Length: 173
Image 1 (cartoon, one colour):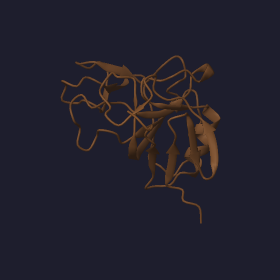
Image 2 (cartoon, helix red, strand yellow):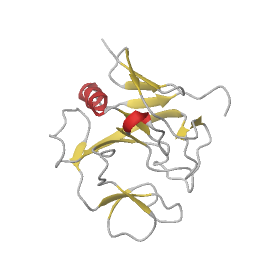
Image 3 (cartoon, rainbow, N blue to C red):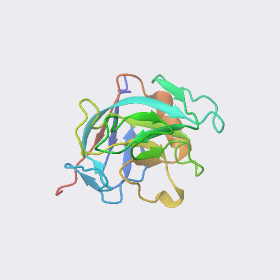
Image 4 (cartoon, rainbow, N blue to C red):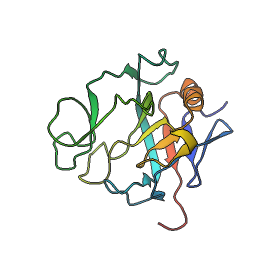
């Protein structure tokens, strides 16, 4: 039986799932074991996959065994370390620094929330670590893991709860 619960990511930008390798973009600062808010790094470690959000105006409801919710135009993610709702989904308007999830560029047409720094939340350890759609040319992210839309949809179709993602650490940090 295939293990449908483990997604592995190498620091070189290869995501492996069910014996298939997908190209992915990682944070502009690479992979780090000591992630900090705003450092542009993808955190190394093993993390649960929490839930999935998608743009219902752009995508049909994806098939997945994971928790799935449609995004709304006023959805955002709080990335303000000094705010009570740091590293949580919030609604606009919102006091504190946020990242809007309803984007024109299609990058967040589907968002798989990775359970990084969320239980418990630690101030300034990093927020909004997602699997999401890659920009053209697989440009680096601010710390997320990005794939082609078709690859991301293929993966979430097969992932079952409880699922985890392991981001392998480079030899040196």
